[in-house]
Every structure is written in C-alpha cells, then in structure tokens.
Length: 260
Image (cartoon, rainbow, N blue to C red; front, side, top):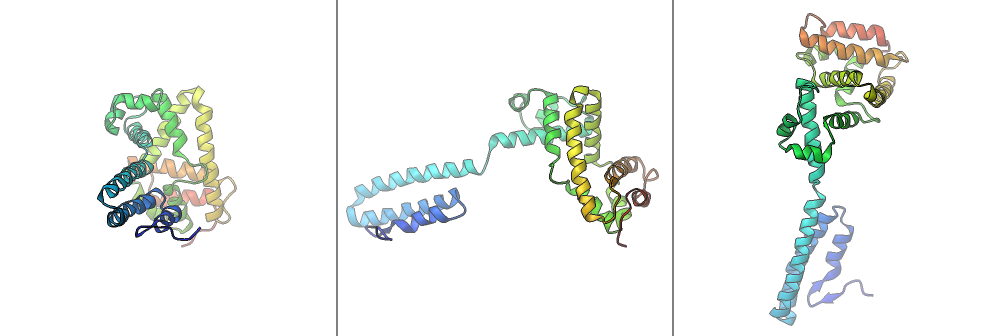
C-alpha cells in the first residue's frame, strides 16, 4: 500500500498521522480534522464538482462537531467539579462554624449549588464529613504547610517562620481540631478517622527521617503536637506561644541537626 493515498489534491496520511501520533489526543485530532475539512473541500470542488464537495464537507463538519464535543467533555467532568466544590465549601464552614453548627443549606449556598446537589453526592452531613476526612490526607505525601514547617526547622529558621505564620489561628489546624472533636463524639467513626491520622503520621515520620538527620525515632508526635497546639495558642495571643518558644520546644523534643 503506498505511503500517500491521493484523492484529488488531498493527502490523507498527512492528517491521519497527526491524529494518531500527536500526544495531545482529542485536541490534536480535532485540529487535524478541521484542517482536513477545509483542504478536502477545496480538492473535491476542483476535481469532482460543487455538489459532491458540499456533501463531503457537510459530513466532515459533522465529524468535526462531534470531535469538538468530545474534546470539551474530555477536558471537564461536571460531576467531579460539583463534588469538589461541595467539599471545599464544607471544609470552609466546618472550620468557621464547626460541624454541628454548619447546615447543609449553608454548604450548598457557599458552593453555589442546591441542597439536592449535595444529596446527589452524599447521603448526609455525616457522609459529607467522612468524605472530606478521607480526601484530606494523601497517604503518600504530607501537605505543603507541613513540609514548609519541617524545612524551616531543619534550616534553623522555624522561629521566624512561626512568628509570620501564626498571626491568626491556622484554618488547617482548626479543621483538624474539628475533625478530632467530630470523631471523639462519635465512637462509630473513630476507627476510620484514626486511620486517616495514622497515614498522615506515617507520611510525616518519613519526611522527618529524611529531612532532619538524627531526629528521635518517634519525634513525629511531638512535632505535630507542638506545631499544631503552638499555632492554636499563638492564634489566641502571641504571648502564649511565640516562634522562638515553639522552635525551642521542638529542638528539645525532636533533636537532630539543624542549620543556622
């Protein structure tokens, strides 16, 4: 079979190869198809007449429209977007008002959705909270703020970092405290929530072992407790816990080498 199949003055492989090999997938195929529509119309018009050209162009345009719709669909998942927006709104309101005080109506309003949209994704407010808890912590990573704190401790700049970071109570810490309170009040939920915190602890332990040479084996509990509680106390008043005090406490509890 020849490398190039000619129909009139139209080079089919030039477009099919683009659609097959370009790494951008649907978007590349759409671009190639649109170019093919224009070029084939010109070629057919020249060699076989306007009537056939119109039919071919119409068929290709329909294919182009289908590819365009597929491209839009591939780039966006409305259902996933809605779920993510609801979770984000719930996290904000649970942090601001607490789980018990935040209503589903308020969460829906903040997310720009209806209450029915929440029920399309979650069975209840408890189910929403548990989904939030499960998605909070990637078992293979720590959140960026935790990594920043570890890095500041390692580099001997934690006092300055904490003084800048704890001007007000950290929303992440507040949400963690709300989750703990939620689980402690509901014995049936404790085990699942505990597993989330265990995964986070293990991830933090791995980061500390890598970033702070010589750190105590079980430094992770002291690290998390001092940083979190220090942030909460400093959020109440700088007099309760300043950056230097937090850094000193961590130095005593964690050990290991820091850079000054």
